[in-house]
Image (cartoon, rainbow, N blue to C red; front, side, top):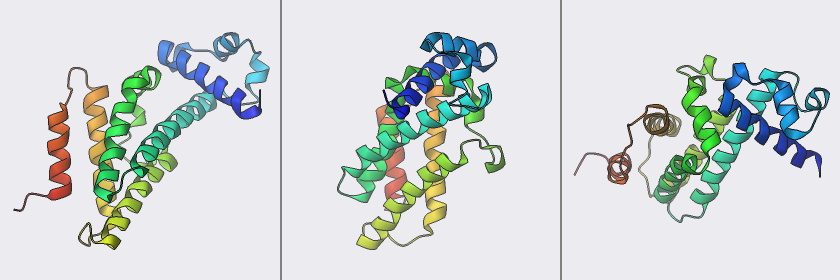
Length: 192
């Protein structure tokens, strides 16, 4: 098994235990025991429990992001790419109960300011993906010209709000019709 495969196993085990018992109750020894590794060996992958947690969560967030991007990049139009990026990401959490549980219980994953954002690089990469789709749409004439960075930020904020409403706030599940209506409004506006 290569180093990256080992790192992935460590992150998967850490995420499972952190999601099950929480950050405070999970120990590095617990993670090592689950992997059949010593505490010392785990420190080859992270400097501390906090570093292991943040590295494992970042790994999971990047997987989520990559899954969404791969689905979006299969689409022909830029509007369809944006829709696929959001819907695939939104539904991804249905298939990943560990990440879904972490998101529900670590609300610091959704900071109100960039200064509080422990995963700013990943979130910025998601906004950049949206910017690329928007720029391509403007270049091809699919979208009218607009200030791309601001619109990408608005779209990303909308996406995060959907994730929070669905996965963080219990019992608040937007229907597929609600999602389609929201995306229609975003992509087509209010004007006739």
